[in-house]
Length: 211
Length: 211
Image (cartoon, rainbow over all chains, first blue to last red; front, side, top):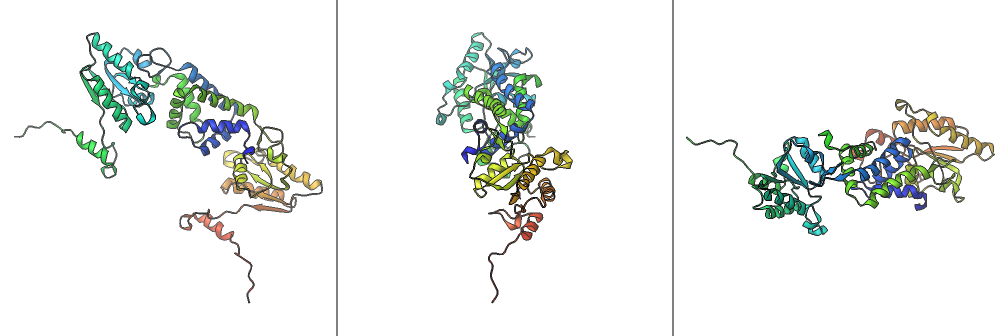
């Protein structure tokens, strides 16, 4: 049976299978698809793979992906450099940019603190974040706000708490994105922790003075 | 926003997105994973892709994938060449081989007849199948059985019916795999057509003569 799957096919199945979210069945299906796909399709994928590794770099200021020493956001003079949004991954930058809610700059940590996985603060771009904050303070214009937008997971919360401690006194305001019931979601199905966060994060609808 | 996704990244997302079952979100996730993956992982995938196209050929007898003019099954003298199992795709061969139920040879059509998609019999390896059957008959040893194992879909059934007609009189027996309730399945949830097939395909549990 094993000998039926010839070596180059087995190697491609294995390579696909190593990608996150791609199981052995999907890996097999993708491989057999590419075996019969037009030559241009297979070639496009292979060359895009090589190009992405050769041409993409990380922004030397915010560590977002970039095609130049500074990424498009750090290059943009229209962005408010006094507000920094700290995220775990480059994909998070894309998600936030889609909302058009934030016009400041970013800092991509490339992960979150996770002692179980052996990821300490030194494995993330935390030193570089602290240096950016220090540099601004040393220049006499400390950052107005650092928004901690790490994921609301165990690791993301731990990272936010760690950063909050390290940043205390260095910036005017350190904030954390709200955790609560997602829009369109159902209170009934919300887990306890989310519901507790939703209560803790409650806000007055409007300021009204009693008569 | 669009300018945020730099060109090589956009190209890889697009190439992944073109694969079957890979949506834009998964394509994005895979791309960002490969951006940060160890160099060896990205390189292994790219080179496996190229190798699979360069080194894999189709068996000139059964059109299964192969690394030589004849595939491992067609090369195997232990296989019963008088029984032929006709399938749509190379993956079907793997699935059947896993069962160890069949010790004959295969013929891979590379698709099924689908007028809607413009796939007629001439776009499949049907001519080659008929030639194999004819050659055996001409040599004085007609095939004992041709098992039509195309999928139980509209297209697969149409293909099986078409082949049954074309093969009539050329082989001792043309059979079709059984359609019915899958093992572990639930009658209650079976669709009507499957249930009808299950009834039509019913078999006596044992031959018993009445007293």
